[in-house]
Length: 74
Image 1 (tube, rainbow, N blue to C red):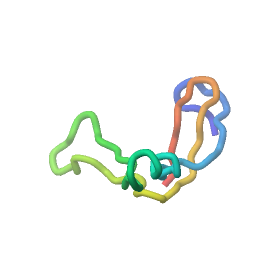
Image 2 (cartoon, helix red, strand yellow):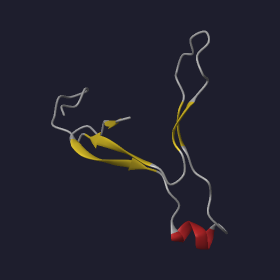
Image 3 (cartoon, rainbow, N blue to C red):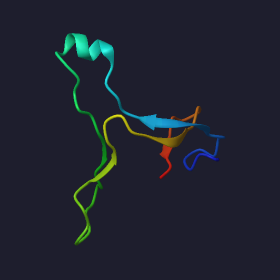
């Protein structure tokens, strides 16, 4: 897949958010973490934000090693 920003070849991978044992030990338990998308400009009738990933979920994704652009597949 080509980067939509700089046209370099992107690297396939997985996007996810999850707790770590370090957080468990130092922040007194697991924190519930989620990845959200909030549009910059909201159209009439459009949701205020979308839940992309809930805690522990993962989805395929791509990252550009040149500019750092990240794309998540649905």
